[in-house]
Amino acid sequence: MPAIDAETIAMTSRRDFFKFAGIAGGAVAASSVSRVAMAALPEPVIQSSPNTMAPLVPNSGRPYNPVVTLNGWTLPWRMNQGVKEFHLVAEPVVREMAPGMKAHLWGYNGQSPGPTIEVVEGDRVRIFVTNKLPEHTSIHWHGQRLPSGMDGVAGLTQPAIQPGDTFVYEFVARRPGTFMYHPHADEMVQMAMGMMGFWVTHPKARHPLIDEVQRDFCFLLSSYDIEPGAATPKVAEMTNFNMWTWNSRIFPGIDSLNVRLHDKVRIRVGNLTMTNHPMHVHGHEFVVTGTDGGPTPKSARWPEVTADVAVGQMRQIEFVADEEGDWAFHCHKSHHTMNAMGHNIPTLIGVDHSGLARKINNLIPDYMAMGERGMADMAEMEMPIPDNTIPMMTGQGPFGSVEMGGMFSVLKVRRDQKPGDYKDPGWFKHPEGTVARKYTGPIAEPARFSAEGGQSMPRVRKPAAPTEVNVRKPTSHGEH
View 1 (cartoon, rainbow, N blue to C red):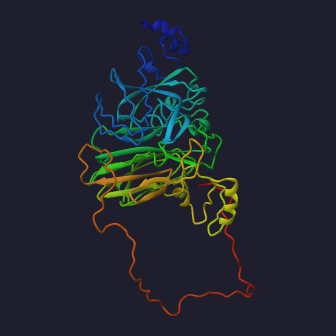
View 2 (view 1 turned 180 degrees about the vertical axis):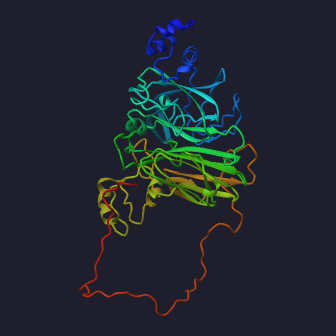
């Protein structure tokens, strides 16, 4: 790149200067214009694997304890005269949501969500953003303290990044915490297509409100409406989503969270869906130790087993994994633990439609009557489904069908997990006598009071005949 002197800079418009320097566009702090412009862009790192990548141990800059991005990875950086430089590429991607289903999404560096960005409090950070989408975009650094011109709201704080252009953002990571990044341009479309990513700022020294942990996980909650057999989300959907995901993955495609017995565990969860999510951990109590506003005061912490994460929020929970076993970890909204969920299905529990099924079988041999006993039939029967579609309830555990989907995974706590080796240990081997089992002995009748209860206030007119109630499922399904 040729040298650029001050006179050339003064005679060149802002946009033309960036083009001349090899950087199209730019939301750049004035104090660093010439230095940024003369630096070559870092090579973008692309990742397409849906597996959980090993934590990126810092090889330059301040040291920190890295996070594990569930079914994701951390974006490498380069040091340039004391500045951490990253390169994000906004582009269409193909994301495997679970084995057997892929979605055509938009994301960053080959994946949706994009790679996690990890920095240390006080780091000066420079992020190059190249737009390979078919429309303009921007990036908002959700929850960060930074100059207004770096906040990433297209039209308000910067011009939009046009297709083919590269912008550069630069600011100091001023406070430790858990944050996100996502577009603030055509937001309804771009976030519905999966454009988002995680950001973690580690403390630069021991912090009175931030404990050291052995395992530090992070993932983003997102939702999609993808019709069975299709691959592209409906971007205009507002309430009836059918794919509830962690890092754009659905169970059984979500990796387990593997920890060692007595590890101190931190889980960071960000919500970019259209509804709240009560996140529930089995077998342990936790405390909420942080939000995207920062660490929570110790006086404001109390034990929980479920923490609600509202739209646009981050929640950071911590606990000691002191109960060995395989423990479910999921959103406690039951429809969010299903895949390809249909909302206009009539309730047929208790309805004998076997005769009708036989007649239909004459025309459609593969037809199966479903829902007569409950929805679990759908997990047991391997009925034909459209290509690129995952059954509503799936996953095979050591004792049979798990009958889950969507926002569900397993916390695996093991005493024999070797330090620093967190590969999947397989299913838990329960000590003898500690598994619920079928009972075949006599069941004694419990002692009861001879008189109890009754109608507290009789009706004036009694009905002539008993009322028969037909239970129907509501037809609308808004406001999960």
